[in-house]
Image (cartoon, rainbow, N blue to C red; front, side, top):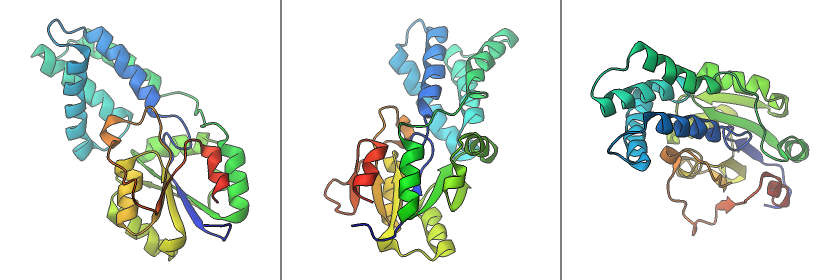
Length: 230
């Protein structure tokens, strides 16, 4: 690696700023409210995870998809549609996701400043375009990136498109993120290097195996540790 100029592509949610912990808090409140008489919270969560997995395919990611999933989960568990009052309660539980201040991960601004002196920085984030743009705009770090890309999904084709758009040399380009499913595996499949930054609250649907024998995958445990390698 050394200090030669490279292209560093950053995931946003749970890499640059906190995200999924907010969803987890909403889900925890939801599970407490549902209080199913026969299913444990873990079993109810599994039902919700399955519904989210299906809805992500057709509705994408973000607050609207979670809200839809919470409603569908309630209907499946109760075997009836929610009442108007129950609808309002579910909406209220999810309201915390609509207006909140972006909380950057520790050391992000200063680390990006130093990395930007040596390398070209891009951002690649997936989800609802309007919702992700709002996060980008309020993050205060958008100006640190030469390009910002919001996509519906991150798969191998997404990375090939970025490679073609910027005429990237894959040997000198790194995808940096917390999600094995979206950041690490498809980036490697497209020929890019990858940096895995584990996050304790990575969404369960983003979990996957990381090939520890792959010498083109670097694992660091704090954002500032990137400065030791780039």
